[in-house]
Every structure is written in structure tokens, then in C-alpha cells.
Length: 455
Ligand SMILES: [Zn+2]
Image 1 (tube, rainbow, N blue to C red):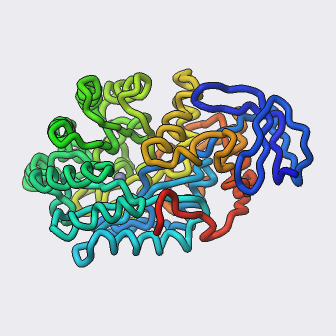
Image 2: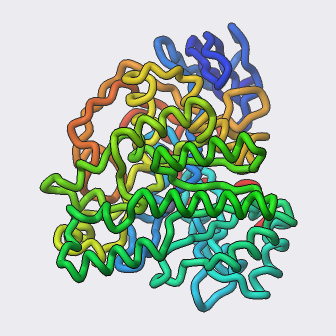
Image 3: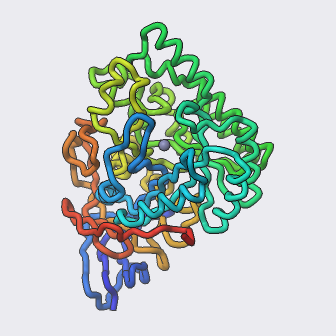
């Protein structure tokens, strides 16, 4: 006897979209066939709907201290919002504080997430130094299944910046033990110098924000990191790529055999830097900043030809009271934009509906590639036999007009306000449990579990 039988839907993967029934038992997909006629405790009719794997958002900052303020959500509200958008797994960061080692940071963060999250999760270790202790802990963490190490090339004032020699040492250590080096790539000297110049010229208002973190800062840094990866033979992951030139550099490096995986985020694929000229331009202060329309086109091309592999939300939710100071001085706020709930629905609208990109591609970027890159492809990212029943019934005809209120994130505004989306998840399952039924949350706080780790 099955626990759940989803009938008459169109089951989607990166290879195909085909009519099939899905049988679920004990949280796993156990049957997948044209027609299943086995008794089941519950039968769900998905006629007219798609059956999609849950999205895996590999880049989120839930309950995050950004330097001047903490983001609004808890791991409960953040993971619940994710679920409403059809995301069934997220990977967040354990930031090593100045007074602790990286292993302690990981343990602390897991302890925090585990009691709150309603969907499964993973943790990237965010390393802030290259001390002998950190180098000693890297192999130990990898052994325990924490295998991604994030480093920043910028944010010196916040104590995040890793200098070049330290970056090389860390990359080598991570690589030698089979880990993944994840980087935020912006040249800190450029950003610092340009920011100081703008302040002295009394131009630190949001209109000039993009000049403080120009495309050049990202391009230079990605170019340098690709050389570092070539030298150390590292497996490199570049977060939130934003410029056309960065895409070209990554494409070329991949051709030459550098083991690099690159990601972009929903907002860089949709919004451009004209947002900073708006009355509410302060809402769009994030790092890197929004770019030009030509960059947006290059990012989509990069996704289509496999130069970029993953789309994430980089969810970082601040309300307007925390962002408004950027109107006159962008250095007074912590950058970041929320979007954990909109990842799947925005991609369905902007890729499938508007750009006529095959849905199979979007599934690669949101589910299958994230699962592969972050080592959970044995159980997540696909609607297939043996996989966790992390899936959604998605109505491709259901409309939603985005506004400031109609979402479940804790921030009080919507950067895509007024956009009409067609296609919404109507039922979302986490390991076979119905956690979202239209507008109703049925999941449980702390029900999500840590993936790929033995903590
Ligand atoms: Zn981020």
C-alpha cells in the first residue's frame, strides 16, 4: 500500500516532460509509470498540472547579521516561505566569527537551523581566516560531510576579506581533501577606493551605488580566481555572477579545463541598474549591484550554454526601515535582497513563459545541478524512483500578481511589485508529507533535516 499516489500529472525532469503517475511510500518515490493502479492511503489528482522536483536554493542568508542589521526572518519563517515557492531544500552559511573556529561556527549554525527549519537543508562553512587551526579543521569538516568553504574577497571592514596568499593556501587545503572552494568575487581595493571617493564627493546616495562596486571589480576578481583555481587545481564555485565579461571569462576557463561552476541569481536575470534611479531605488542595494541590460542577456546565454549552472535566490531579507538609509548614504546599510519564495515562480515566468526556454533547462538550474554540485544527487533534485519525495504539483495556468504583501517572507516589500506571474505551486511535499496546500502551511517547525553531513 502506497502512502500517496499522484495521478494524471506531467512529470518533469531535465530530460523529459511526460504523463505519469508517481507512487510514494515512507517519504520516497517508489513507483513511476504511465499508469499506477495500486492501493494508496491518499490519491491526488494532478490533471492539468506539472509534477516538478522541489527547487534547491543553494545560496541563502536566513537570520543573518549583515554588519549593520540582522535580516528579518528566522529559519522557521524563511524555510516556510521557501516551501510556499516550491523550494524543498536550501543551503545556508555558517559564518565563522572572530572569536570562534570554523568547526564551532558550523556546529552553532546547525544547532540553530535544525530546531527551526521545516524543509531539509545543508550548510556551507564560511571561513574568515587561514590560521593553522582553520587549516587543520578543513579536512575534519570535509570528513564529516561539510565540504563547501565560502570565502569573500571583499568586506575587509566586516572582517570577511581573505587576502590573496591566504586564499591560495585555503584553496589548496580544501582541494587536497576533496572540498569545494566557494567565492564571492569583487575586488575589495576597487570597491573601497571608489566608495571613499564617492563619500568625499558627497555622492554616497543610492543613485551612485553602482559606481562603488563596478563591473570591473567583479571581472578583475573572477579573472584572478580562475587563475588561482588553475594553479591549485581547485574545484571552484563562483556565487552570483553578474556581468557579461565574467560569463566570457568563465566560459573560456571551462574550455581550458578549469574545474569551475558558476551561479547567478534571479534578480540579476530580471532587474537592471535603472532600478537605482527609481524613487524607491534604495530597496535594490545588494552586492554585487544590478547591472546593464546587455549583462542580463549574457547571463541567460551563459545559462543556456552551460557556462552558468545554477540559479539561486541569495535570499537576504531586510525591510524598508533598514534599507531606507541608503537613499542618502548606501554605506549605512547592509546590502541584500530577499527572494527565497520567488525563485521557482520567477524562473517559470521569466524563463519558460517570457523567453520560451524549455522547462527542462530550468529544472537543471534549480534542482538537478544544485543536487549534483552539492553532493545530494543520490536523493534530491529529481522526481524518480529512489529519490526523496520532495516535489510539487505546479499549476502552469495559475496567476499571481506580485505585491508587497502576498508572500510569506518577513520583509515588507516586493522588488518585483506589479509583475504578473503565470504558474504557481499548488501543493508542495517534503519527503512525501504535504507541507503546502495552496495558501495553507501544513509543515512543522524543526521537521527538516541536515543533508550530507554526519553532525
Ligand atoms: Zn550571498
